[in-house]
Length: 124
Image (cartoon, rainbow, N blue to C red; front, side):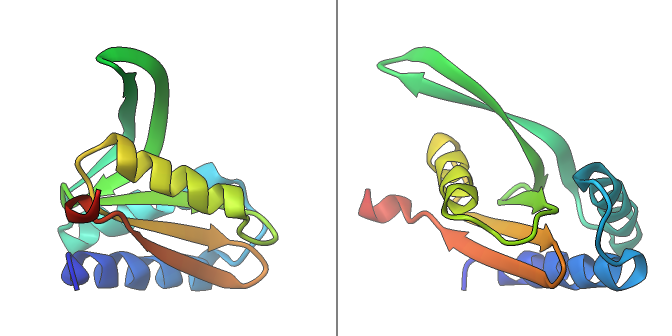
């Protein structure tokens, strides 16, 4: 599996933060806690990673992903009751707009849940 070591470590950190803080906080709280754990684990990351969407060479949109970890994995944090189809679409669009192929949505809802998404550039 592509970037398996990074995704496993991010998921481990996700559960550690969830088990420590529980649910009910804003996304920013979980994001900051994850940064502390990324630093402790030695994972490299970029927080608030800018993403530009191009159409025929012209920028038509600007977005910000919560993290890019290890230079390869886009991570989006949610703190909602359930993940939605639009949450998954958002992550896939981030992958489509970058050179990244692996993404994780981490939901700090009533139950800790994550989804791993793959955007295979070889199939596009």
